[in-house]
Length: 353
Ligand code: IPM
Ligand code: MN
Image (cartoon, rainbow, N blue to C red; front, side, top):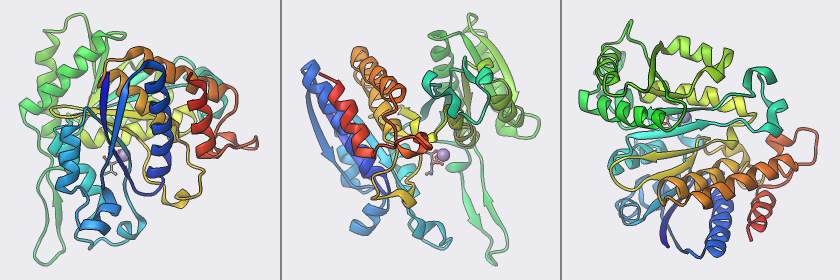
């Protein structure tokens, strides 16, 4: 197959972890006879520095032309501590999500048997945990009207959803659940928020069409608690943009390190595959960041964008093997030997032959 992949490495550790995913994708291409072309494009702080825009039109064009996008990370501390900055790297990510129509962000919570002892939760709580959060990604408070009063003493961020936006993501979640253990948890705050009451209304209507799926509704505060107390109770969870942002960070630490978790963002145009971690500026350039989240995002790319399930499975198996054999970066190694970012990437790529 001919695979055209756009690469948006971004900021901080983004370029380092992306390099490892590229090694792995190339090794898979070689073994399975795919012709792979990478087109690199600017995003984030790097793009602000170069052209004053965190998601330039040329980058958008590259993404639209590609079969899939591999994304590193964006964000830079010089913007975090400057609330008055007019242009921020994060606007690049949000702009990309909106312009590519990436309304569904699929974030699995994976538990690796060899890393159970690295989790902050007890082994018996997590060994059977296996759930996926489907986060709505192009609506809600992230994209509603925001502003300040003239005297700057009042600020607002409006949370808005249309029936159409809610319906397409909940339908996607139902279908996703049908292909798993057929349990769907719809997370909202319907005791307080009108948008949540719309979510619940749509959920209750769609329930009647997907009668093979068992549906449960949970308030977001209770869901946050349940993720820690009884993670194996979840199969597929669907929720709005900001609740999903927060809950998936919480869920990511169950695995032992956030650096391990991949994601897929799918929707109307080209899909994007990215680790759920941020740009981790303190580690940038040190060759210590965990590349597994990005490598597993490449596995999701083979599965979701190209329907190449053997290729995806091979990457996942070798990642399991690297973890089992202790070929891991410092976030997981603890007092054991830590491998560098590029050593982990080289090791995994070398196993594919
Ligand atoms: C994520 C990130 C982004 C978000 C930030 C960087 C804008 O935290 O992908 O989860 O909040 O969506
Ligand atoms: Mn986040």
